[in-house]
Image (cartoon, rainbow, N blue to C red; front, side, top):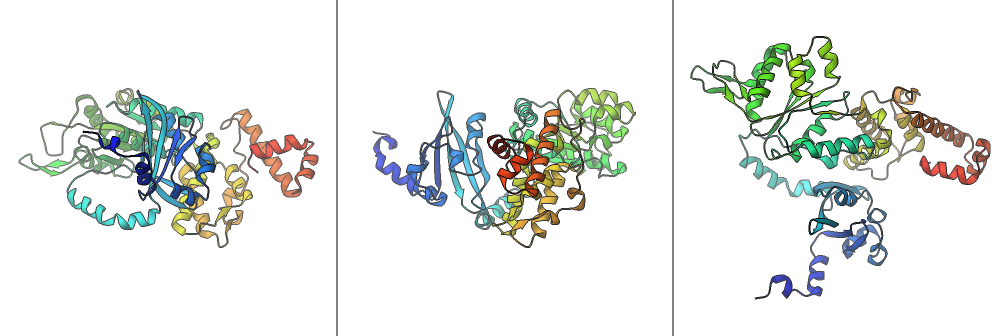
Length: 446
């Protein structure tokens, strides 16, 4: 008896692909389009003849098909901002004899707002099924960490290497750098991904309540009265944010968990086994706390073996536009004003600011700017005063010499263009040939 695929003719297969209520695209290992269905072409305002053979990023904006080919990792139900709206897309690597030879992508839902409405009954049902469970689903995956700078690429590669282990991980970075996002990415890539991811902010819980919060309590019969976070995270990951604020007395008990894999709830005289992976985060180097006597030396040596150092935003300005545009598109999708754009001068101010609050501060500023704008262009006037004041952050302590020179060159070109909008005249004022000037305009995206 012939298999189903043997019995299906090419014309029938094409009919299925063209009428599957989804948009499809297939690319080769160079990310050039091999196939795209007609409905997708109509949405993209192109033809199949024009699209096939082209690099996919020239046809589909914000595509991440190349990432799937490079990493071999699938993206399932990944938000994709395209033509003014968010959609949900699947991207899957295509392999032959273990080698990635291309990728297949499909758009499942063509509007996230509709998807949320249509799926509400499904989500409600799932919540009823899981009622009483302690599982906290992770929100972020590795592909949600934006940026292609060397530092971010290195961190992502380290995460892929360490995620399968059960070793504790220390994440160091200034406030607002997104440390929890990195922690969730580790959990998602681990064998514990279907188990709980539980977060505890050690700085937000008063010291006298932290033991109860972490270890729980038992009654006179040694029966659990209250589950602690360790018990809630059983089989999964416990994320200890602001670990540096944990009292020394609690650090001793945390060390016991790491060494023996047991906890002792309040009121109990018996150790209880727990199976939990620890990921901790601090906003200053633990070594500084160690030297000042605020952190135990034995715990430090137990937890710092695998350390991820998350760079502040000012040290990864190569990623700035991608991150800023992500927050911008995310916000306008909620607001509904899809004709809104950012004025070049506004982007200039954003790039010149030092961002002491890092990515979180950038997100808040962009969101506020979108809501404060009445017209269709975000002007500098809606930015906070401190953002509009030149901070001079491009110092030898935060930027390399090359980055400082490029920042200064960008500023000079911007100021010259404001005084001399005619590009030929501006090039003459700067003493540059037209070809050199236009190369610099392209480089700095003017």
